[in-house]
Amino acid sequence: MTMTRLWQAPNLLLGAVALLTLSACATAPDRPAVSSYGCMVSVRDSTPPQDYDKRMHCLTAGRIAQRCSAFEADLAGIGKELSDVFNHGDPSWADWRADRAGIRCAKHRGELKELEQCCTDAGY
Image (cartoon, rainbow, N blue to C red; front, side):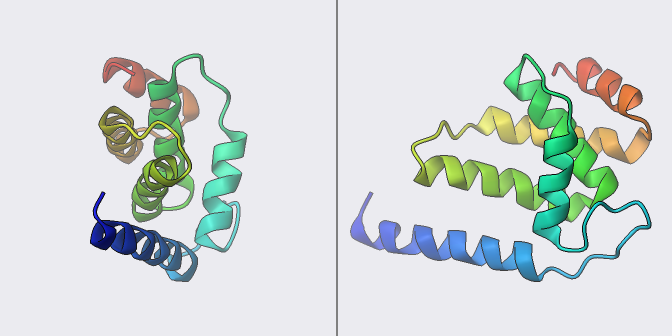
């Protein structure tokens, strides 16, 4: 990476974090936390573990979309991949596609079992 790109990347990450913490989303009665970050972490931690990483992405993003908001699910997916870039993780376009599939599934499925089936039908 060039020096300019290295300088811009942390600023992009900082902007994403600011959006996560400052976004004002409507609070549903069953929302697990008031803050965006708290809601995302609560949903992530309550999602049953999966054997397949992409399936976990699909289910977690879908559940965040259902319990928090689709916007916050998008932010969580972007934040996870940015975190992988800066923390020597494994950033992956396929992870982002699985996140997007989960968000689409969340729009039409209410229960966890239905969301799981939708992720399965989507190939995750």
